[in-house]
Amino acid sequence: QVQLVESGGGSVQAGGSLRLSCAASGYSFRAYCMAWFRQSPGKAREGVATISAGGGIINHADSVRGRFTISRDNAKSTLSLQMNSLKPEDTAMYYCASGSSANSCGFSSSGYNYWGQGTQVTVSS
Image: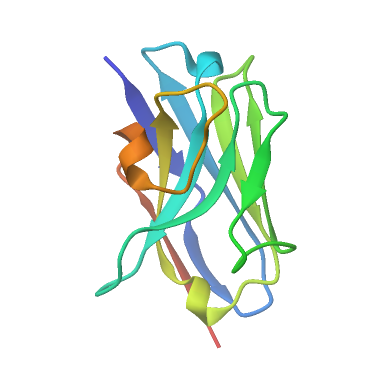
């Protein structure tokens, strides 16, 4: 049974930092792309960052580039998102997702077949 469990969300003031984690189990974590998505009320789900199976191909959305960093530890089957210089517009539910490809890791949610339950990030001004 595939499970993705996020943690690390919370409330922080603008300019602060949070580190999200996603613990994966029940499948071959190291074989697939992983990604972080986010969604706030009334808005479409947005891809934040992607990382290839081996970790060598990383992409961040323009809105977070330079502030957020995605990483993975295949030995521990964990995915992380370090979020610095947080802004109120970063407020959203954050989801980790596992893709169906090793290296073609896009920002479309249709490319991901397993999802976590989400962790809430709230940034106040």
